[in-house]
Structures are given as C-alpha cells and as structure tokens.
Length: 284
Image (cartoon, rainbow, N blue to C red; front, side, top):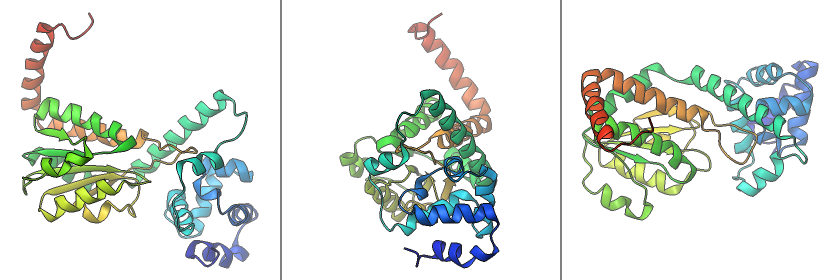
C-alpha cells in the first residue's frame, strides 16, 4: 500500500515535515486500515495535535484540504469497507453520549464549512435555471439518500407541480420510458454508491435529458453522467453519512427557485392555504 501515490507523498516529504506533521504521518502509516475513515477532528484527537494542524498537513502534501487527502487515503485501500467494518473501527467503547453529540454536531459544522468553500456559485445558478426550465423533474435517491430526495421532492412539487421521486427501483424503466431533452433528472449518491443510481443517470444522459447530481466527491461514479455536479461533504466518524451539507444545498436550491418564481409561487401558496384551511390540516 505504501506504493500508492498518497503514501509516496508522505514518505518522500517526511524530511521536510515539522514535528507535528511527522506525528500525523506516522499515525497514518501505522493505521492504514482505520485512519482513512477518521474525520479531521478525530484524527487530530488521536494524534494529539490541533485540527488546524491536520488541515495544514493535507495542504502541505499538495491536497486541496483534508477531505481530498482522506479520499486518496481511502482509495489506497483499493476496496470499500462494509458498514459493519466502518462501525467497528470508528466506535470507541464506553463513549459518553454527551461527547458523541458534541463530536457529531462539530463534524456537521465542519462539513458545512468545507461544502461552502467548495461549492461553485455558477454551477449552483445553472442548476436553479435547469429546475426552473424543466418540463418534468425526476429525483433518483435510494437507501439513506431517500431522505434528502424526499425533502426536495416535497417542496418542488408543492410549488412547481412537476416533480416526482422514483421510489421503486424495479419500476424506474417505466417511469423514464418517455423522458425527453426538456426533462431533468436529479440524482443523489454518497459512498457507498448504489449501482441503480449510476445506471439511471447514465440512461437519462444517453436520452439527452438534463442531469444534476448531488454527491460527496468529484470522484463519485455519478459525476461522469452529470451536466451539473454539486459536491457536499458527508464525513462523520461513524458508519452513517452526515447529511447536514446535502440538506443545506437542497434547502438553498428550493429557496433560490421559489424566489426566482416569486409571483407563481406566491399565488400557489395562497391557493394552498385556502385548501389547508378547508381540510383543517394544521393545529391552531
């Protein structure tokens, strides 16, 4: 594994490293099976350095930041860990719940900061315009990503009345049979990526439909089939993904689309208020 590029960089630059950087380098080499799945804060804690030092270490190695370094470390393993393996290697015995909530919320904050810094405003604006122009919008989100996809579907269909999330994987071919170039497919996928999501995006791309993906890395297998890619960091010291950043991107898309369609959306919401009152939907 030391033959991989990321570890060659670490070994070749050790002579130029500071004392703290050498501690991080040694830890990564000694813990090749577990270190790639640690968040920056957890790695810093285990090594005994500050989180800023971990980030500077990644930049020192000519990576864009810690998430970029982490991805290369994970790819050096040349295999995907199962959920059980990730859980076993990122869980400490007798961890106090109060410590866990602080750790997870802190990691979410870091994910939001990283995502904010890497999001391309021009790609975001283009995605908003794609949503506004689309005749039909299809959302593809399986397994845990279903939660994020459902959130987007609820609000877009509420105001635009043209959005559908395809929930049954076996029925996706029937739903997309008549997809056209003026339709839009929005796909969600985070490691470990589902084959069906990749297949659907590939099919939509071949049919000439617009495609947008919200995923966790530019190396995601969804990206090659996307006209637009919005990258949201999902790192967390657990076997689950952190969806704080993907949800924030979705919230931003909904807000931007509805503001751009202000007159249409305002009328739609007024009509809906009357309907909700008639059916006594909300608690007074």
